[in-house]
Image (tube, rainbow, N blue to C red; front, side):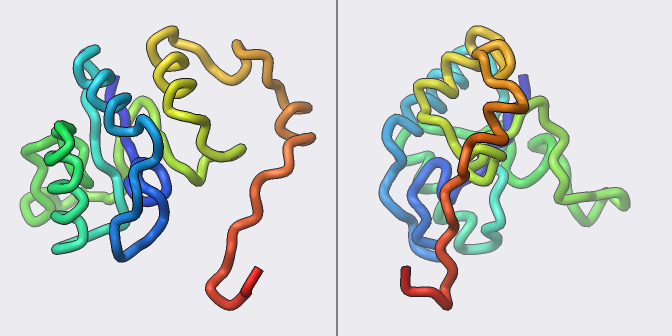
Length: 142
């Protein structure tokens, strides 16, 4: 399976443009997914030096991505007239998912066991009753 994984807020806590502390068990889970044969794409808003810092941070912890901000390793923006930042993946792991980011243990178990939220007993009513965490904005203090 091709899995696109966000960096800030997903693998590490939000501290952009700095790199935050690791979200517990993120890199260990990513290494397990790679070991299980999944192709992981680092899918981030970061570019240039900031993107390279994220790639190096992951690499130093044993996580090598199949591709970074592209669909496959050999894809080159300048040679592909149809290049798009929209990644074609089977799954996306991102802290901005509807309902928020589950813990990495839950993420791994759902992927390994081919589970969905529906198969885990969540339905539309569950999401409607769920109050997502409020995002802090730069202009507010609370």
